[in-house]
Image 1 (tube, rainbow, N blue to C red):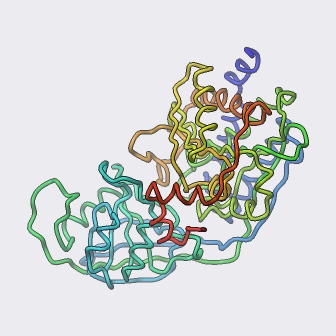
Image 2: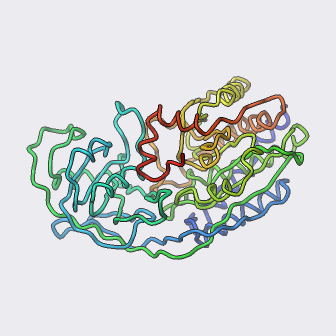
Image 3: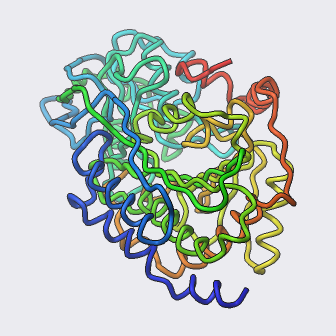
Length: 451
């Protein structure tokens, strides 16, 4: 055992590939772009070089979207913003309303027809579930809002990006922009129509909302993305998927989201190529395209896959950004135990979260009962630098990639072993778990409820 661990902990393979990804077009790997294709080709070549077989690209069509200028204008002053991917081009003016966190009740308790609505990127500690950006956007649309402003909760003058598309269509219905925490609080302080529970700085008298204009320029066009695929291990009737996504938002290098995940896939192939005789089942490695615009690559693969032939999926999205691995296990007890065993084996802390997590490329498989992990990092309550200009290589450490590669290599061997049995779930059980965990209402709002 010591040999492969030592080789992994001294390897530069994964980190070198991460540097390759962030240096492509300065990290610009937006879905359907030339940068995304170059990153996919580089990943294909890297997988083949470290020993995977049949490394290839699997192309599919998507709705392309290219960012133009955007702005939020109040009282003649334009405030810094960035368009949210899949926002339509357009301009809308209406009374400005700050909904604070943008919880479901906030949308229900206000008349938002024709108004410009702002909601924050976080939720309060007392709320029972995370509310995704797309849900807040779709609730604004359903309420008749004229435009949507998404405020970051992380300081640093960092406007957040992130797609507003759901399964019901690739392009949203109203203009949408992201603003930094500082800009959002300035707008909220000066122009909000009423006091909010989330504003604890003082007890202010409610004021009449003032008009705001949201402007978005974007080019919508036909485009092509691609999944990168390769294999190790014996040819077998069932396979384990080890996945990441190669695309990123166009405002930064996409180092943590998700260059690190794709670099980890390459590192795992290097390590597992030397342990291939320990694999009882085929292990297929996939770097999906177009994850950031509605899981398009994984949706495409799942639609064409024999789901019964997939033993499990190990999806790496958010690794390396913190030293402790976090495993969302979707109620599969055997996956809980397998992750904990690996942590114990190497005396390394791991976090196991036995809940549903419908927000990355494992989900098009897990929602139909395929056992699956979403593997990220325990970063505490904040998302960190993802989806901002600050998602750059300097935030990551090669030491963390190597440590986590040791655990994930051994976990992959365990998943591919005939000694580990994990049964698929009935999709009705997944749906019931989503209902029990209160995830279902948001998915129904966004059009992502498949049952």
